[in-house]
Image (cartoon, rainbow over all chains, first blue to last red; front, side):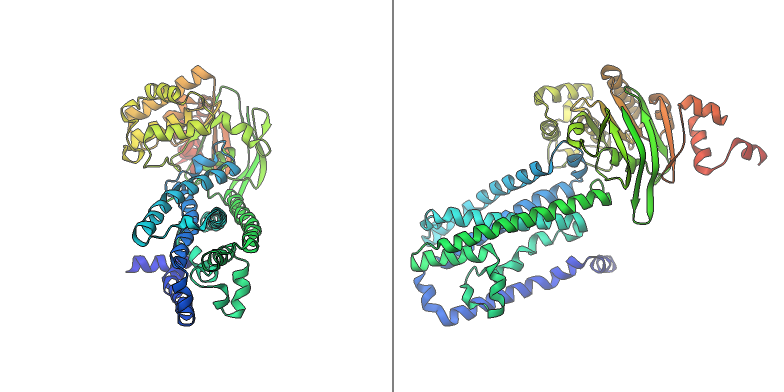
Length: 254
Length: 246
């Protein structure tokens, strides 16, 4: 009891985590319920809207977690000292993290996509070439959040590792995965508008419900992602530099 | 070869390394000695560019580490008890990863050579996390020698080794220097190790270098029988005259 009380008192991410999941679940499913109450016939017509939402959301989640976990594995293994004393350059590390995340995401998605087809006769590939744009934008946003998480873990240590699991879910209610952006309260719509993911899911619904490809949403998602990636990588590199100054690279470990 | 000039590291109000200057000639082996917390590991971490100095500079092979880090790092390597290799990878996989990072062309060939030299062939296929402390130290040494570094930094190279294995490890380090002419900087608490391996000794206390010289020179200067007695005298701040008076 005392042991775990010490840990809780020392780590604000752990306290945040305790309150986090119930809050996020309540917000998401509250909004979904509100939407279904008023638009149930719309959903019934849009075969696969929810399934496509689940699958594409997982692209973003797997992209982020694949990147963050790979980096944190190096921290758990106390391997950062070896890595950063080697000729490995930061941009090489960044590229490697993105590539391994891509591979993990593709492997992870294979099962979900396959079972969606086998169990529900839903093929995500029915989205056509737009799927490539949706996939790229979502995984890039996942990477941006992943780099941000890696930076925070470098700064605050492994006590902040739970951020890797829950930070991206903070964006879920505003990404409008299962309901249109218009269902959000007016004051929250500007928040959703700066999320590339919200534009991807708006574009996905336009394609599945109306049968139209929204170039506007795709363009907005892509442009926003440039900013998100720049911010994510800048945060990571900033905290990496800070870790060198604070002497953390050869000390961080489990 | 290795020139450290006014190197300083402050963590907030704590000065871990305070204006340290020393030089190690090409092909020489030098030791940083000091009690726990004296600043040895932080000094080595700054030479490896893992820690950014608050002041001072490091020059290696005549080049400035701060501006030419990525030209210098392929020519250096290190082992330290404060870092580890991923436990779930096998020894061979870990060595292969670092061989690639250091740009070694014949990865398999280099691993075979090291496996023979360091007698790690029997557990190349075993997960690194399943090895004993002594086996891990040998693997860490193998990783440190992968790129045949011209500058080798060893932080407590024989820590956690039994006397027999520690003696064997010292032999490997001696042979490596003799064969390659590498420059070696080691931090150690083992005075016998330092006397055997090192040409120069820099004794640190409170983040500063408080004494330096050859092992034999220090013993003579302090009128002691062993380097360990010299070390204790410096760390405890007592002299032969003090002890004689007591």
